Image (cartoon, rainbow, N blue to C red):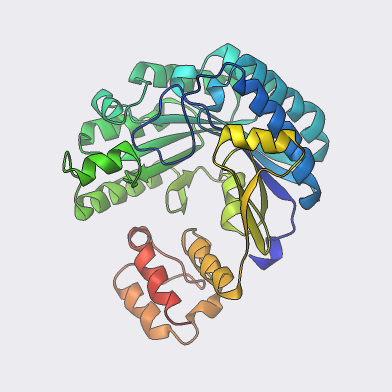
Amino acid sequence: MTASRDEGCAIYVHIPFCDRRCPYCHFYCFVNRDPGLPRRCAQALVREWELQSPRHPGPVRSVYFGGGTPSALAPEGRELLCAWLVEELRPRLAPGAEITLELNPESAWPETLEPWVAAGVNRLSVGVQSMDPEVLRFLGRLNTPASNHRALELACSLVDNVSFDLILATPPERSGGREASIALLDQYPLSHLSAYLLEVHAGTRFGRDVAAGRWETRADEEQAEIYLQLVAGLAERGFEHYEVSNFARPGRESRHNQAYWSGRSYCGLGASAHSYRFPQRWWNLADAQAWCLRIEAGEPGIEQREELEDSAIRDEELLLGLRTREGLEPAWRQGREALWSQWEAAGLVDPHSERPRLTPRGWLVMDQIVERLSRDF
């Protein structure tokens, strides 16, 4: 991690608007009722970069437009951000910089995506989530299997680096629907997949539903089996499992996310966005109106800052290292050989790697492993 801290920065741009809030989502986003807010937020995003950029010298190695639903941004907001990408960011971009746009299938049309690609977006991430209509209804999604196909076909026609997301182990999911989702890799030239076991967070509608006993999540053993079957199926298709939830064709790993996992600097723009430059982290107000007011006044939109202490830096290095295939520095074995050997015997740690790194089975219990190692310090 230390060697990569000053190798340029990654920019995350948060677009908080959604056409519908999904019941599982715990990120800051909302259905907008103010027609002037998209343009106002876009102007504030551009202004915030002016305020933040002195803290992030060096080349910009990746830009990630996330949300929310960036592909559903109103035209006036999209035009402002595309012009910013061309006029302000392009001179700062490192050679071969990765520029990603998240999109939902229902808002993926030539008129919503082509301006972004013309401005420099070279990677598209499609929120498919499932090819099972019943699962999509359960997840509260607006997309359908038909719109998933349309969005993937369009995305693959515009750029040669397309990723898609899946949510696994929902209560209505059946093996046939899961297989149909994975089969998209055989139908389109997709380069990357992010697959997540359904997580239920307090404060979401799903969190309230589960707390009230309206439905139950799948048993841990069943979720583990679904995950391991996915890992095996993707390996057969030539996808490398490079992070606990991420799979890629060789050379197509998400460079932006790798900045987070390797301890590089990143700059978050927009309401609720997080930024980091060793050893400090700060995050913005999770209120679009309040954040806009701060930026318009020429003030930081920051809600809070923290300076990481040595113990927090160590714990973060441990967690981030174990979640990727790179694993930890060999020094993490010293004095803990019996513990690592125990995990190797249980199939949780790769016995053939010089660097301590987890297997897919180990990733399923990563939190317990991190907690156990943290107690040694």
